[in-house]
Length: 267
Image 1 (tube, helix red, strand yellow):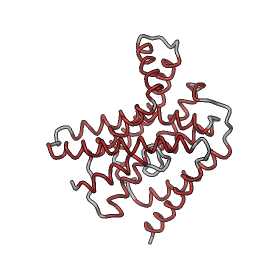
Image 2 (cartoon, one colour; image 1 turned 45 degrees about the vertical axis):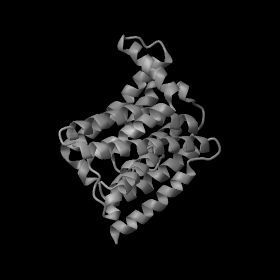
Image 3 (tube, rainbow, N blue to C red; image 1 turned 180 degrees about the horizontal axis):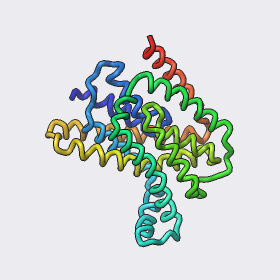
């Protein structure tokens, strides 16, 4: 694959994976609107690996706590914040895995990959994000994450399997509506992305393991590196802006893009 195509793919995935504007929607739109060849599942895995490494590095202190807590959870002990967060992350990931498998086995996931669907989800869930951000209280911090809230955020996360919804956007929406401040809602959303990306990446890896050759592996390595760099920059930018800016700029982008896509889809 041409280097330019790899860079565009990596930048789109890296920048949009953690911003509330839908990475899957943008990746589907790339071949739909430009006529470029579909990148294929091998490169999907690669860019997901890149973004996974970026979020692990950026939230390393939290990841370390959860990893150590997971060890205690395996031994049946939930006596530390890390162990409890590990349990919450497992619970929050179950809905998206179950719904994802159902969509894949039924073939519905392919039917949802249209410009019209992405246009509607961009627009509607952008408005929902604005509503939640403007009306949600700010009474909770990430450290007070509860099992009940993890279940609710996990159920909302399953909606992100509809292209254009945005996994980070919908979980941030849920977090704000549950009363978490903006930075805490985003922080929990990013932590929830780790097991979700691991699960989706593992599923895709099983499908492409027997098809990969050296050229594909080379392209995948390049895409992963650039996706990692782009995702790390996007994370730093978003959390810096959250100290002084709301989610409104992302909402405006979603609404404008949604309207444009609907015009394209229906004319």
